[in-house]
Image 1 (tube, one colour):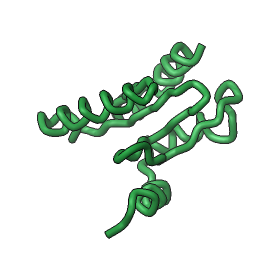
Image 2 (cartoon, helix red, strand yellow):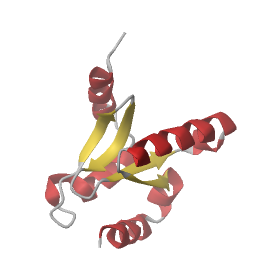
Image 3 (tube, helix red, strand yellow):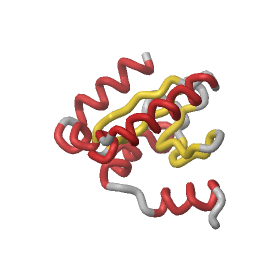
Length: 112
C-alpha cells in the first residue's frame, strides 16, 4: 500500500483543472511572495495547498463534499489542522470555475 508521501506525489501528478488554476496563482511565490506547496502530508492528511509562513491551508472541494459522511470527515480534518495552528479555507470547485477573480480576492483578504 502507498504511503502518504507516495500518494501526495500521485495527487500532484494528477491535479484537477481547479487545482491547476489555483496553483497557477500560488506557484513560484507569485502571490505576495509567499511560498505555497501543494498536496502536502500533515499528520494523517494530505492538504491541497499550504503556506507555512502564514499557517494557511487552502482546500478545494468538489460536490462529493456535500455528502454527510464527507462533511463529518472534513470537520474532523479541519479540527485536527486547526489544533496544529493552521487556518483552513475551503473553496468549491464551482467557485474556481465560475469566479476565479472572487477566489483570488478572498485569498488576498485572508493574507493581508
